[in-house]
Image (cartoon, rainbow, N blue to C red; front, side, top):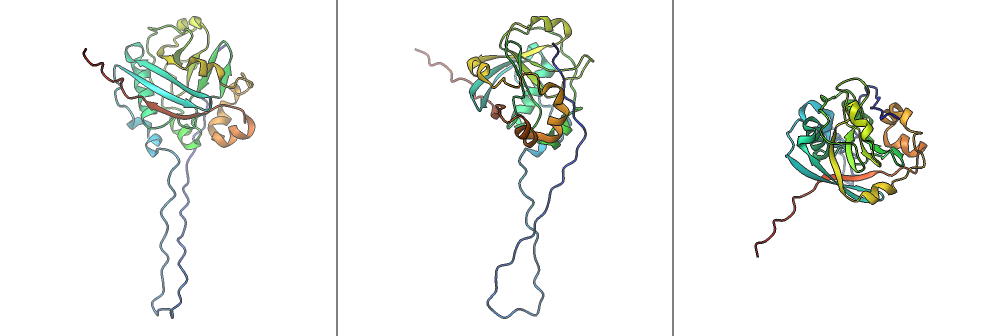
Length: 241
């Protein structure tokens, strides 16, 4: 069984600009023609920095935690940069700019993986489809709870999709799947994510990327999703006795 990478076509975004309505006037109209002012463009539903992947390259801390709030509850991923520096840096920047917020957990195969990371917003998915990072050597193993990027068999194809191992998938180590973190809290939540569609979405990743959240909700309405993924504050320092 293979973990597939993202397939997404290049898409563009068009923002509509509305026109503000004038309030009714009770006095005689002025001889000077009134003007209508354009309303401000609607607020973007996503962080627009996500449309420029090449600029999101901040180096991640040596270790950091990410709390992921889903429709089933929370789990926490602890990232260890030494395991996968390129992977950790990419994950840090994606989380920091809200990339995973609203993402569906579209592939849940009991005993194998939970996979996610296709943006629910087609313009964002298109922007990241070819924003690859170099491979990292495998330093940790794909055991239960470890978190890894999906990729194709070709080298240097990791983008934004990641998976959580639901079982011992250490056989993936030999094929270059390098874990960058581990679920340290809430693995029971990960195990509860809806798995009724299993592999049904695996071959439809291009449609997911192009249709976004709306397409998924229409075709796979029972999928769980990520409400918020955020870098967790460091634990408070212990007081001296």
